[in-house]
Length: 478
Ligand code: FUL
Image (tube, rainbow, N blue to C red; front, side, top):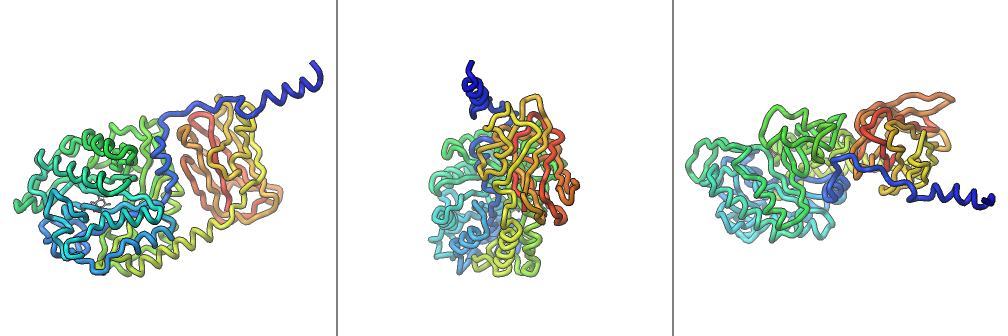
């Protein structure tokens, strides 16, 4: 063999594509769940007759004539949300009191019998249209518990609920997520019966058939409930995902309304059988609905940023509730907090000090350029660094070229191949010494670690435990 042939053989044995990528570690996200992860921040809108009765949970006996938001303007909502950086919006089309924000043909307890636009209004349509125009995805909250409906608790109500879903999923454009929460049964008006009705949360709603019905109308919709199947509740309403946060969980251990599982929901399970990531729902105010007395209690921009770090920064999606007031507008105090929050995000994550920085790794899968360490700073979410199958630890070293002040590190696993990393830490290099600045367990879709500002010319990510060979797609430094 000539020297040329030898060199050529050596080169071709490492050409991209030569080494197969790692096999997935199951479960993995569906394409729709992947798109959901990438949204990162969604808004919740709680608005209904409760806004006018000053309640959080209406009884179901409220007259539709109370619903009169004289200045309602969904375009104001979407403009504010878009500017803040939200990607989707979920509206309480129907809350527990049963009042519908769309003129459902299956009940009189709706916006069509309210003074709002003389009964001609349809806030579900107005908001879904405004979302489409502004490039936001639209989702629905349709409470299974209905304190207005006479048949609630009986089989007839399930037909009613399904008919309402058929209306929403056929006449209101694309819906990315459907929310059904655990609050179920109890006292209510129930068509005038005024009594307590209890249901068996496991069987009454016959969820599998309801979900199939919805899926047949719109494939790919993400279902939220404690047990998913699309995304799970995070176990609290304070905006805090677990520091250890697995996107996987075994749904048999959960069902909507079951108590005592908050910490399981908060952290997920390393060996969970299904990909059901946590969604962090939290309100900008103490309540979910607007109450004038809470005008001075709106979360500050700093509060919202802290919540961002404990939700998006822990691999979850943030679902932040902003309730319109009695005019039907976001209140000035809420808007100013959102503007402040956006300003903090822009300021804190202004310049990625690691973009296109040189990176070296303790080892690279098959020594292939396709899996090189450089992939973590190439600003391309589809490329990643990984190791050979039998290696479950690794060191990535980023060279910042000069000494910089560093305060955050953002890390992303390539979760399309499953969530793997169980433990890692960060060290920074300054004045000839390495110093540990942060330690963490899971990485997941996104992990943001904040530490006291330090001087650093190099950064090391030490992956110390992983369920299989680690696969990292992105690292940013601020
Ligand atoms: C809960 C409901 O009972 C609250 O009113 C609110 O809608 C919250 C997001 O979900 O289950």
